[in-house]
Length: 248
Image 1 (cartoon, one colour):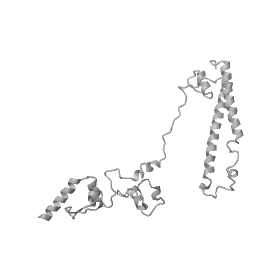
Image 2: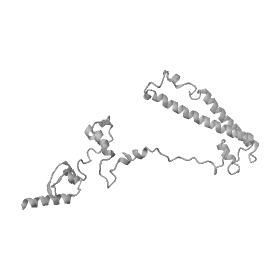
Image 3: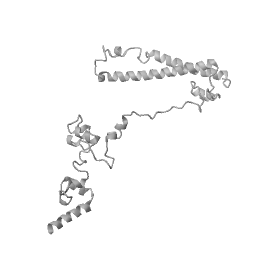
Image 4: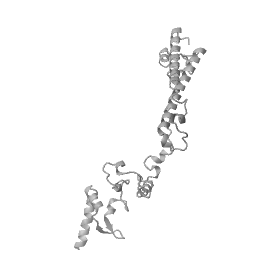
């Protein structure tokens, strides 16, 4: 602490002690965020084990917030006590990593710090994610094969659609889309996904067992196909071939 004058050191100690007293007084005034009293006494319930968890969900959330706030205060008090101990030992204001003095301006801004700016332990944000997310993202996770060109079998999305046909607890008012007015429209891709065929063309082009064109069924899928302008030339060609066969 040789680089700190007596007045600077006295000022820093006063900052630490004032902060320490402020936190201790706050904890005392609010009974340590109410944690001195049991949750059972706070809610008036004889027991929380025989009730549904949702019955005390708000109280439980508030309790968790109080615990987090108390942990934060305890951590600050520990940091202040460590800083005061370093003052008494004569090591305050000296970085334990590089051994260089910590500037007074930094100590005044963060009186509890034990490191200089360069050697401050970095706050590492973990990128670890629960393993379950591999199945949740994207929708249906690894069981969804819609994005793979080499797969067209029964996948996780199809399994959900099969179950969804039996009904869910959702209603059209809770649906994601804005133009859903009935329960039959709530199924995933209910108005878009084809049943019994892979390509839209297969829904209205009829062939025989050998693949020869027999007829074109002008159904709803046919009209949708024509309105989108997809494969118009192919459809027209098929119609022309049909007309030629009838002519000859």
